[in-house]
Length: 122
Image (cartoon, rainbow, N blue to C red):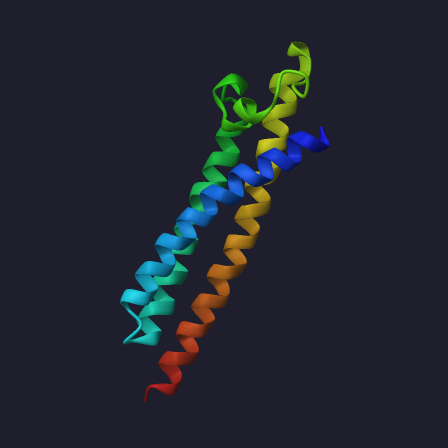
């Protein structure tokens, strides 16, 4: 089970890393206006949070054989078929919600930074 958690963490981390790279590129494009950059970054990170929460919601009903987690587990690391669906969906849901909490915190910080920059602009 611990190996499944590690693999789930790595797969979700990679997906969030690519999304964060895209958000960072948008923020760099708006770097001439720091308030707008942090506001856009916060909103896009909030969108990522919503997507992660949606993925956590659908993890319970998604077929475990169609997940990236299942593909990365070797044959001997996979749980028995009787409990595979429950184990995979529980691990994925927990992982998605963990990353959603982190993304929400980052979105909040970016929103506060945008607020600070808008206060000092005047």
